[in-house]
Length: 443
Image (cartoon, rainbow, N blue to C red; front, side):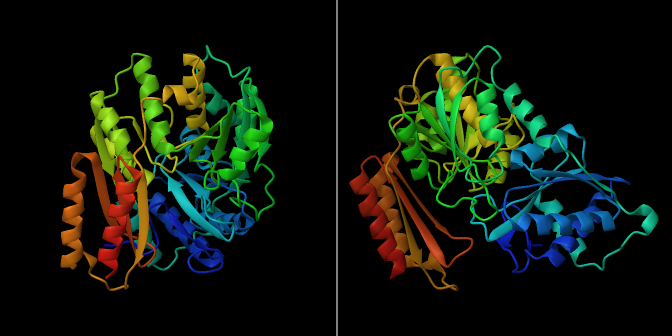
C-alpha cells in the first residue's frame, strides 16, 4: 500500500491547501491518537513547532485532535526538531510531533513525528495512520478526553542537553562566532548554548516575525552568513535551517563547508581520538571524494537514498553510528537519535578546539570532486529509463569516467524533472559529461 499523505519527511505543503489545513490536521491527530491507543491506554504526546505564523493554527488543531481521541498533550512551543526528539525520549512520551516545513518558505508548513525513542517512525506506521484516516472518527466521551499542559522550560532542558555532549575538558572561550538561525526554531537556543560554553557570539537570522523564516538567511542561503562573518571578523559562522536539524559552517576566510565535508570531519576527529569507525552512511548525492577518502582509511561506506530517514535506516542495519547528507543533516547516534544542527556544530568546534587547528587544516587532505547537476524537464508520462539513445550515452560517460567519477540520473519526486548529476576530478569533464547526458535525455 503506497502512502497518500506522508512523504520522505512527514507531511508537508502550502498552508491552506490540502492537506495542510486545520480540519485535516485535526483528523490526522485523531487518527494518530487512535493508532497510539492500540498499545497504550492513556498515551502522552509532545508538540513542538518552528516560528511560522501558521504554527499557532496547526498546533491548536492538532491539540484538539489528540484530545478528542483521549490522548494527553504537552505543548513545547518553538523548539528545534531535534529538541522535540530529545524531550520525547526524556519525558517517556509515546510520540513527539513537530510542526515545521524545515527549510521551506513561511507559506509552507508540515507535520512530522518521532517515536518514543526519539527516532523517525517507519513506513509501516505511517501506512497504519493513513488507513485510520479512512475510518470514521471515534470521539471519546467527556470523561475520557485528553488533557493539555505546557512545558515551560522546554528550551532550557534542551539547551542543557546540547551542552552535555560538548567535552567537559574543552571550552569555546576565545572563539568569535556568528550564529544564523534562519529566523527559525533555534533563534534563542543556538546562541545561548554557544555563549554558555564560552564563545563570543554575534547573531543574524535570530529575530523571527512569523513570516521571515528561511528568508535570505540560514543553511539554504549561507551568503548572508559569509558576509556577517567577514564583517564581525569572526572565526566561524554557524548556519542552521528553520527547524535546526541541518548545518552549514563558514570559516574566517569566508569558505563554506557543506555536510559532506563536515561528515568526513566527524570521522577524522574520532580517528584522532583513537576511536574505531566501522563504517559511514552517505546518500546517493554524497561527493565521491568522501567515499574514496574513507575507503583509503579502511572505513566502509554505504549510500542510502536521499533523506535522513534512509540514512538512519542504513545505520541501524549495519550497526554504525555516523552518517549524513551534503545538505547538512548529520547523524552521530551516540550523541543524539536524530540529526541535530546545534550538536553537529558543537562537534565541529570541539574538533578544531581539541586539535588547535583550523577547519581548513583539519580537512586539508579532502578535496571534493567538482559536481555538476542539471535538471532536465520531461513529460509527466515519460519512460526515460527506456530511452535507448540516452542509455547508450550514459554507458559511454560511465566508461569515460571509470573510477575517477560518478554519474547519477534520478527522477524528481515532486516535479516532472530528471536530475542529472556528474562528478569528476576535473570540473570541465564533469560539465561536459553532464551536458551530454542532459541533451540525450531531453531529446
